[in-house]
Structures are given as structure tokens and as C-alpha cells.
Image (tube, rainbow, N blue to C red; front, side):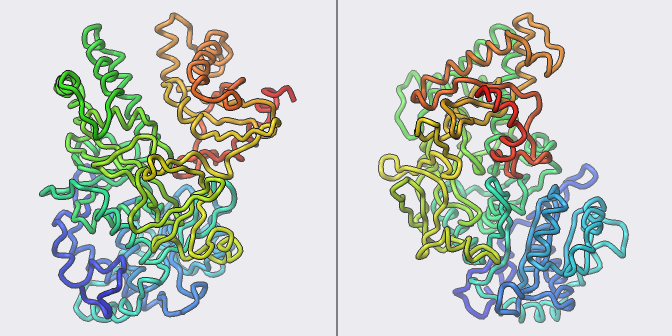
Length: 599
């Protein structure tokens, strides 16, 4: 490692010295015109250094001591090898990268860019260029916008990538060696489930410590001769960004999915050993599996659902009797192997984050030889605090805290943590920082408990708990997660703050509902009309009645309303990581909620 201080742990260090030679030749794969192509590690290095030199010539650097005065670079781009090129180039200059979701609203875009005083921004395509340039007059600091995928030479970023040479390497290295691992390398704006997005300042040490800890502690199968991963979550989220550096650290080939719609196809092509996902994606995979089973002939259908029922009984790290082991073996030969094939055939682990995963799914996929590894963390913690180990999975919990992270629970159950992974603070918001960072301890705002004194279990977000008019607290997330085990419920939000009882807003799974109607000879002529049917209302009441006994009386859903439209990111009802924005949804459906309570 060629640095001024070998104790430094910076995310770009793998580009220096001989470390880069240990990476696979087809390091970063992407699909172009229907053909898989790749960047070699050397290509990545040369492009990053060439771009970094251009940025330095433009005065983009991190030479200022005050974070507010350091150069800021924006990146609005879908995940791709070029995303990583820009990320690394900015790191080499010591400047600060501010990545944003492509579907960000123009109002938020202007607010964030002005707060950060961005000077230059890279965007994916002409559409995003036009979106940004249309408000450039409202962002005085923004001088230049470059398009990553553009045939227009004047707008393209490609001329900025100077041809690599030893002279450029030496010049950029002088600047890179000034970068300390305690320096902020990125500001990630949180998706804002409870308010205005805040800029989370993360240092090289924050992300590196988290990446190193997960590599050392969590994955015992990283001895395969060839490790392959598929990336399809947004890289501007710390979850996938940290995963990207985890893959790099462990010598993976990283393939980028063409789009979310192409993930299933790309999985079969790339045949990854591991990938990151959010719970909703796994739920959709499971729903697809079940829908295929429903279409089978009587004998095949019987065998299929026997295998599903068998998988639901699966227990991790426990000895099974010979009869159950034989049944699992038989089910694997007949059914489970087809599930693995649908995911490429090689998947050893699916890393789950961004929300609670249903226990049922963890067991079902576990029985099929695919370990769903659920973890927990926040942007402010780079992100991982706790993780199920691949050789020690405890469904219903987020596993054991990382050894590098200290955990304590406050009297009200709030989870606090301390470690090198904890953020530097919120950008330009010292008061907000002081609210959550106390004597080095970060207060997460999540409520949890320890199971068997070693496994962390998340019960809810502190700010999402509500109190009924009877003074009883209700934690909505466990209720919602259990109700979503029904295939007929796509989305659900529990309400009842200040009311006598708990109710729910429910978005049905309309494809599943249409199938149910056909099987029961009930006409299905569209969403709006279907939801007015007495039969449909009775169906959903039966689902509620099935799960209600699992909760105490005050938590049980007494009334509900069925909604015809799914909540989406584009409509502002979900965060980009697919968490529901409770305040937004409650505001949009205040009339429905009022009717539930006769207001």
C-alpha cells in the first residue's frame, strides 16, 4: 500500500500499490447492447486517476480544513461501474461526494445543492441534465454539469478522463496522501421518513471499519475460488455502497443489473453467490414462486406445497431427525433446486437490509440452501450495527452486534451504539447532531431488546410508536409485518394515534386478489369495483381475524379500509429504500382514517 501512513484506512487505498492486482480481471461487469462487458481493475484505476487529475485542475479538492469549505461534487446516477469511477476520483482529490437518487424532486435537489454549495455535478443522462439545468439558476455555486451517458462531446464527462500516465499518477498521489481516514468522504442525505432529509457526514474510517468488520465476522463462505455478486440497489445509499467495498475487499466480481425490472434475468445470467436486497424484493420472489405452484396440476401442486410447508418448519443450527432430513433432501431434488436456479443456481447468501424481513421467508429460503442474512443499521452507522452470521442465523432478530460496535439499551429500550462506524455528524446541523450523539454514543431512535442476551431484536422505531386514547402504546411494525405474510396484502399501515382502537390502511395484492376471485367464481372487473364487494371485505376481515389473536387486545386491528392504489416512491409515499412515510400517507388518507373513527 503506497501511502504516507500505512495505518490509514481509506476507501481508495486498494487502488494503490499491488493490492489492485489481487482483484479479478472481469472486476466490474455491465451489460451494453445485450452483451456483458467489463472494466478491469487497472482500467478502473486509470480512469479514476485520470478524472481525479481533471478535478484537481478545476480546483476541486479537500484542502480546506473546515468541512463546509471543502469542494463538493454531486452524483445523480444509476448504479454502474462509472458510479464507482467518479466516487474514487473524488476521494483521491479529498473532496466530498454527495450522491442523490435519480428520482429526487427538484425542490429537494435545490435545497440540498445550496446547503452543500456543490460546484460540479455528474448526471446519468440527458433527462437528468435537463432536470438539473432547469434549476441551475437557483444554485449559484453550481458551475458545471456533465453527462455520463452522452454522445454530445461538450456535455460528456469522457473528455475529463485524462489518458493515464506515471506523471498523472504521481501528481494525484501527492493530493491523495494528504487525505486522512478521519476526513469526511461523503455526505449522504437520509431518505427522511420522519422529516426533512439530513446530510450524514461519513468518513473513510466510518465506512472502512464497517466493511472490515463484516468481512471478518459474518461470512464464512468467502473461500470460494470465484466469488460473484450482483448489484442492483442504489449506490447512493450507504447499504449498497458499503457492500460494494466489501465485494472489492474480498475479491468479488461485481456485476451491475441493467435495471430493477431486469434483476431476475440478470441473476440467471450472472449466477452470483451473493447479493444485497430489501425485504420487498424477497417477498415478490416468494410470491412469484407460490403463484407458479398454484398453476401446477393436482399431483405437482400437492408436492409443491408439501415442500413449502416443510420449509416453513426449518430451524437453523438445530439437529433434525432423520425423517425430516430425508424429506428435506427429497424436497430439494424435486422443488428447492428450481428456486435456486431461478436465482442463478449459485446463491449462498442474500444480505437483507432496509427493513424487517418476514421470519417465514428466512426459514423457507434457508431450507432451500439460501441463507437470508438479516442485519440492522442506519446511514449514521455506516450502516451495520448488528448482523446474523451465516453460520448462526436467528430468525426474528438482526443477529449479534459486530464486535467492533458497542451496544447499550436505554430504559425505554432505545438502542444506542458506539464505534468507529458512527458518523462524524449531520452537515451544518450541530443541534441535530447533539440530539443523537452523546459522549460518543449514537442514539438510533429504534427500540429493541436482547434475545438470549446476545441476539438483538428490533421492535419498532421510537418515533413511530403511538399511544391510544386509553394511554396504551402500540408498536405498528410487528403488526404490519405479520399481516403482510398474507399473499393478499401488498402494503399495510397501522393507525390509531390518540384513538380508542387500532385500525389499518390496506393495499391489496391485486394480482393475488384477482386469482382468488377466479377460484371462487367471483367477478373481478377492476380494482375500484372489487374493493366495494362484500365478499372481498369479508375475505380481508378473515385475514385480520386470523392474525389478530397473535397480538394483545389493544394491538388488534378493529377496522380497516382497502385502498385501490399502491404506495410508491414516485408519489412520495415511500422512501427510496421502500420504507413507508407514515406522515405522508396519513395526510393523503386523512378522510379514510376519519371515517374509520366516525369523525
